Image 1 (cartoon, one colour):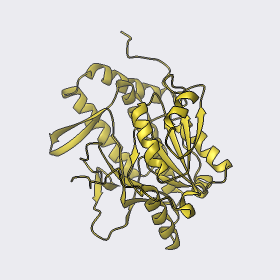
Image 2 (spheres, rainbow, N blue to C red; image 1 turned 60 degrees about the vertical axis):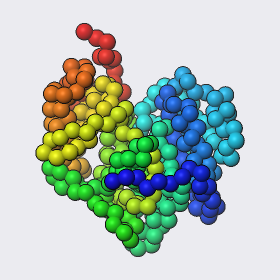
Image 3 (spheres, rainbow, N blue to C red; image 1 turned 60 degrees about the horizontal axis):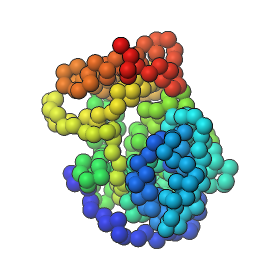
Length: 329
């Protein structure tokens, strides 16, 4: 399915009634500065306040932020951390800052995501409408696609060994989902106060999954919004392959497979995580392992990282990866 072509030249008018209640929390770690500036420009058409939390990158500082702000009407707050706290730690720093300043909602963004026109307003309007219908809404999120305008995502629910694809048919505003990726997700501060912040022991990978499933366990609802869009790329690149049907797999740097396997197993051991997701995750990890054994480049390093993740689960280790295995014998 092709992504609907929406020109970036379309200027979205900012609605003060909505955007004054929303703060963007954008976490960076060695960002592509050109793409970051494009993201900030598009955000400036929809919101007034962005909290940029940098995880101790060496390619970004206050001077660079001032240059990025040129010709952009945006209240940009820059928090540069002295160490890499992971996506979970960075998000929590930004969320706490937004709460302290009295915002009602936070929009979570990755450094490589670019919102399309009216994304924020559409997410917020749907959340308010759903709440008025009696739902306890923790978060709403958009559909996304690659920057080339292809591979439009779909929403899904987990059904034990597989995912149930949810169609956005004509007239469908939103669909009830199990999880959303963190980037592009609009969260209610009131929901965060009751559900809690992101789990910093996970560092990266499955941080969004854990929060969404924890929210569902606590009685909250998560919705995907059909008419909200953004550009976003999963992994460094995607590969199409055949296994019973055509599938896509996202390639990451080897260290990411440590977190994917470690955190996946950690979540499978937690009592509030649904059985359907646990079975789904087990199936996905087995397929990922099999694919990298048979087809993937850097297979031995990737498999070594996967194995190290499983060993650290056994030893009860969490947080940031302590040992760099990429150059070890």
